[in-house]
Image (cartoon, rainbow, N blue to C red; front, side, top):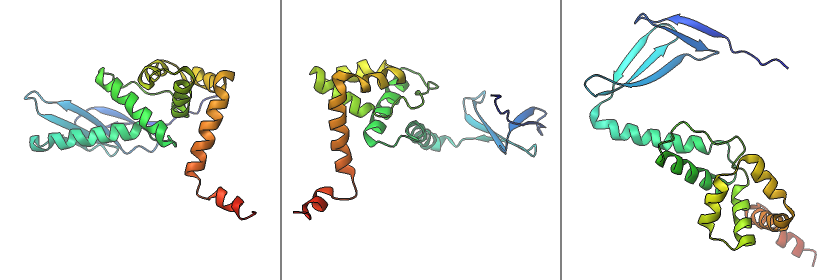
Amino acid sequence: MAEATTEKEAVKMQDGSTREFAGKRKMLKESFVMDDGALAVALYFRNGEVRNLVLNPALVTKFALHGAEQKYGDEVSGVEDIDDMVIAVDELHDRLGKGEWGVKREASGISGTSVLLRALVESTGKDPAVVKEWLSGKNAAEKAALRKSTKLLSIIQRLEADKASKTAKVDTDALLGELG
């Protein structure tokens, strides 16, 4: 099956450079440090316009914090389970602490990790921090295999059922109670 290629348009910018705009993209962004140490953002518009915007030094902290919020938010985009979101944020924070900005989490690598973590803690009796550290080195396929292991399967099923009952919008116990 052939991969779809995104159309790219080369646009001559007013500063003399040429930028490639993919698909429907209308603006490209670049950040840089000026010779005097000031922080700036260059915006390149598909119509050839360019804006080099020097950040107000008094607002640099706000810009940084906004970027941090965005980075953490992007990390949990598409993750449905709140416990999995917490784990994803913790893992990102650990990577950022090591200076790993561009490392991405594996697609679908976090889904169900919170239940797997709890099942491993229950099964092994090990400290959650130890299990979490061990689990962070496993890829999505390894985590999926662990979730299906005979040693953990019954624990995982029980934990997932318990979790589902707590988040259910319908009180099934009350409904069943109506039957007497």
